[in-house]
Length: 245
Ligand code: APR
Image 1 (spheres, rainbow, N blue to C red):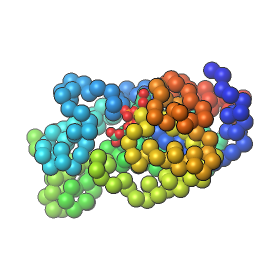
Image 2: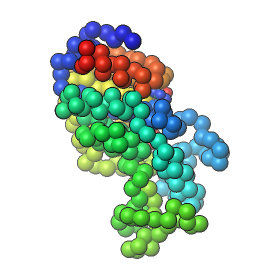
Image 3: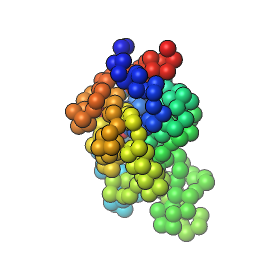
C-alpha cells in the first residue's frame, strides 16, 4: 500500500497524535459492529433499543442478557493487527492518545496504556441504584443479579443512549483532540455524539484529519486523507511506512 509522502513525513515529525476508534477496529477480532444487522436471538432488536435506560427500566432481563451475550463473544476475542499497530504508535510516540468508543477492552489487552474509554467497559458491572461496582456476579442467573450492598439491579458500566459520558475521560479527549497535529478516525461511523465532534474540534484547531474506515462516513468530506478498507490491514501498513522504514 502506498501512502502520501506528505502524510508520512508529518507522522515522522510530530508526536502530537490522537486516534478515535470505533467498533470497526474490533470487527477483525470477530466482534460485530453496531450498525451491522444483529444476529440470531437479537435480530429483532436494534442496539439503540437495548442500550438505553428506558429499555433497562422496561425489561432489565432482556438488556442484561444482551450484554451477557456480548461479554461471552468478547471472552473469545483477541486483539487483531489493527490494535497492535496502535500499540506500536504509542511505543514510537509516547504522547499518542488513543480514545475509544469500544467497550470490549481489546486495546488494553493489546497493550495500549494511554487510553480513554469514552463509553465505559462491558467487563465492569455496577449497581443501577447505588453505583457500587460488583466484583462478581452470577452470569447464568435466571434473573438480573442484584447489588450486595443495596439490592439494586446490576448493569454494565457502559454509557447508554441518553446518558452522559464519564466526565474526566471526555474532558481529556476534547483537550487531546484540540491539541493534536494529526487526528485519526478509525473504524467508526462517526454518527454518535459527542465522540463524533472530536474530529471537528481537532480540525478547527488545525489538525490534519486521517480517516481509516471500511466505507465513507459523514467525516470523509472533512478528512485530509481517507483510506477505505480494513483497519487491521491499513494500520500496520501505515505504521510500517511511517516509522519502520
Ligand atoms: N476496518 C475498518 N472499518 C470497519 C471495519 C474494518 N475491518 N469493519 C467495519 N468497519 C466500519 C464500518 O463501515 C462502520 O462505518 O466501522 C464502522 C463501525 O460503525 P458503528 O457500527 O456505527 O460503530 P461505532 O462508530 O463504534 O458506534 C459508535 O454507537 O451504539 C453506539 O455506543 C455504541 O460506541 C458505539 C457507538
